[in-house]
Length: 151
Ligand code: ADP
Image 1 (spheres, protein in one colour):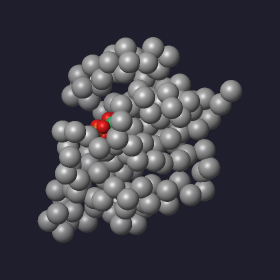
Image 2: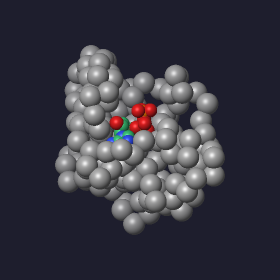
Image 3: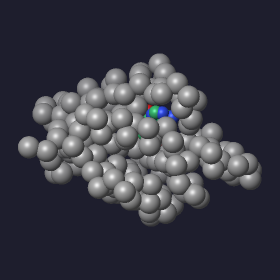
């Protein structure tokens, strides 16, 4: 049986920090499905969702074990529908921990077969943050070095 993990997020934009979590996750899972969700609290995106889906596809074009989809349902429901046994998330700091702690408990409550696996960020990528990248990009700063694809 293939072990599939879903890696959900807003990915607005997808960064080298996210790429690192996917590549390291491949040591644990046979397949990783990157799931771009509409976050109800962050409804207005900066980068178009279709554009980001295409860029993530481009990033992993040579790695068939990685795929990407867009979803607007409960992550626990999506995981069940696509046969994923785990949710993969990255942890940068205690702020991430506080947030992730409650989400992962609710997700497990919704689907008791579902575990959330956290990977601690690689130190050189720990400061990477999608909202700062959006801000730098908005004021014409160069964000290319933070992204694993050409904008
Ligand atoms: P969300 O809005 O769901 O938090 P994000 O796109 O911001 O979605 O992040 C998706 C996941 O990637 C989260 O688990 C987040 O902690 C993780 N992540 C974000 N940036 C990094 C980074 N630089 N290194 C490792 N993990 C990260």
